[in-house]
Length: 294
Ligand SMILES: Nc1ncnc2c1ncn2[C@@H]1O[C@H](COP(=O)(O)OP(=O)(O)OP(=O)(O)O)[C@@H](O)[C@H]1O
Image 1 (tube, rainbow, N blue to C red):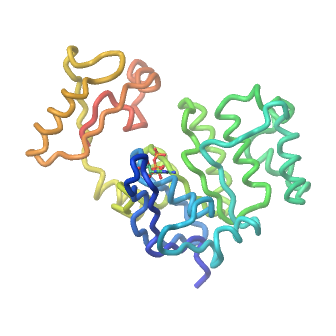
Image 2 (image 1 turned 120 degrees about the vertical axis):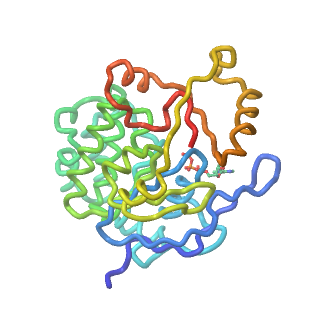
Image 3 (image 1 turned 180 degrees about the vertical axis):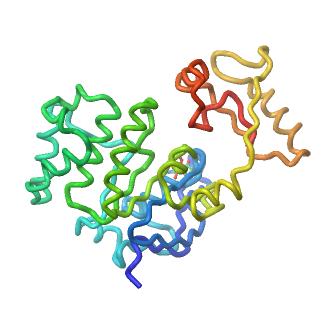
């Protein structure tokens, strides 16, 4: 059997919280990701997705357990160019053009031969001479993706790569990823968006409170654990510019608990959701409903 891309055993991470309490971000994860898999880490805010992928990349050291990337430490796998990442945040130099940025990173890796390949692969050809500061958020994310491809890694890890993109940019980003994945690269990405896992991942690892709640083919996870989303419009007198009145929400949580409803989450309506509702296009993002009982 070939060496797995990622092998995690009992992987655990504790942080010290603001008042000195222990926060368990990742709580004993066992996981094997094989070569060529496309895996989504799906979960709500604070589920532990970022901490988990940070440990895959050696950016955070585990408090307990182990993680190996292609049979070696994450640090070594990164140094050898076997794994690279597209992170949520991270600096691009605004005064460089797209091509200059790719050239600089390719020079660092000793791979000048990769410049045009990755520009083309990330769909940046028409933008190659544009200054980074003139690129949209979505275009900058595609540039980060191009940079991640410079060492021709076996594994690419993406942490919520489409955060902040509009619907069109998100689609374009995933089209680019899809084309790349067709070449057999292993891809692991963290996302809030069930629709992204559904559309793109063969396998979904559903995380909540630092644990794996479900892990399997995306369609099976959806069917077995998806449940139903109940949307509602709260009374006008409890809503304001800052969201829904907290005391009312606490009462609501208490009221629905006897019905077996837990983890009630409320997200403010986004412009995207409003746009989609107004245009009649189905919403792809289930986290951006006006109010949702999960
Ligand atoms: N450096 C830190 N110090 C203290 N607590 C942290 C730190 N990093 C993360 N946490 C906590 O660990 C938990 C998991 O956070 P993490 O960022 O991994 O979740 P996530 O699923 O990626 O969430 P999001 O989707 O919001 O990015 C959260 O409770 C978070 O507040």
